[in-house]
Image 1: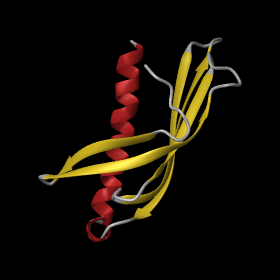
Image 2 (image 1 turned 90 degrees about the vertical axis):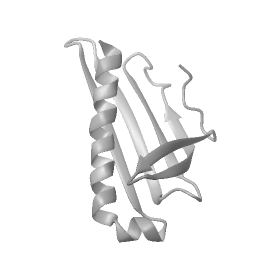
Image 3 (image 1 turned 30 degrees about the vertical axis):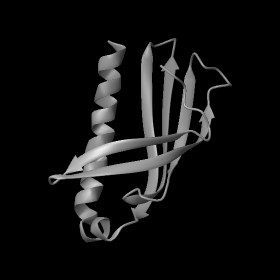
Image 4 (image 1 turned 135 degrees about the vertical axis):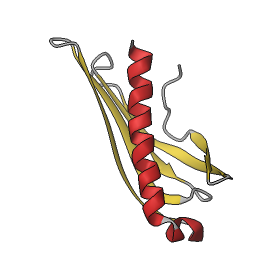
Length: 111
């Protein structure tokens, strides 16, 4: 798997309520130089065309003494298109489900 590279453009494709959305983002930074075996993080910022405007940071940490893996998502955003303004509460719920689903996917990948 490739590491996120600053400047790289990525996109998610999401289907909601029968509509498809392509959400472009750019990797803002990647942190894995300190101790890549114990901690890594990257963040991306949304680009024009994304349904939200903001940034999201993903971090993973490994504690070798306990064997525990920690995962964190920190995000801030606001609606960027009229539709996301109309469905703001639903969009927030969708984002929360994404965070839980990504943590579960990471857990499955680590097994």
